[in-house]
Length: 338
Image (tube, rainbow, N blue to C red):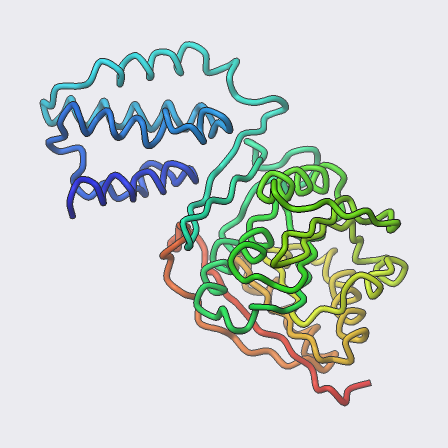
């Protein structure tokens, strides 16, 4: 692989904060010139996108530390800017990470587009795990790229959108007729709305009298909405006045038995308002096989049909496939079921 292609791949991994030990450098650092070191800095830590919407500073420090260590080991002369940037970040690390522990990730997607997401820097923030992107979301995005015809031009509802990776990707890539991204924790809804507004700056804001809609954007090709949707009270949400989904999607929403009944209530309601013509695409990280199987059995007991899909290899989105198994299911129901 030539240097230019290796730089592009490293940039892609840096922007979305791929763990340093999982980045394939393709030999880029083994004998890198000053010119290419400068290009590497410009593509990553000095990237205008990173300057405006910084990725986590601790990640930037670790990234540069790895480069410096490797160049030392290979006896490669290091660019002055490399040390200068490293020292600047290191000395101000405690003060630069954005307010309330938030930072950004940037996902380069097909079509020369980028998704920029504000995320929490901690695993759990404000009592919720919905403020960062999870592996199953990335796997679902990859699945969508390989099954575009199932999603293009459709009405799509996402349950448990979190910070919005899957929903925003589908809004950009699939050109759905309408897509509604939903969650129910205040901090998650606020961050989700900010991310939708950030990624569709040219869209027209549409007024709505539904108090559960925090933003509604006409993006020419698609309508994109953010909705506060509590699964337990979905019957009172007036969802059917906003959308009758062709496709229901969810990623990493099956992990806690306490959520199963509310989730099933929501799925039943959505299938009912569409006369069972909806399809539910569910992407799960199998942390506990029994937990996942319990929810699948609940679906089967209420007359849903489940088909396990092939999980596509990571191509556009990076995740650690060795840490936990990802499984994707298509869930349907006989139209005649009442």
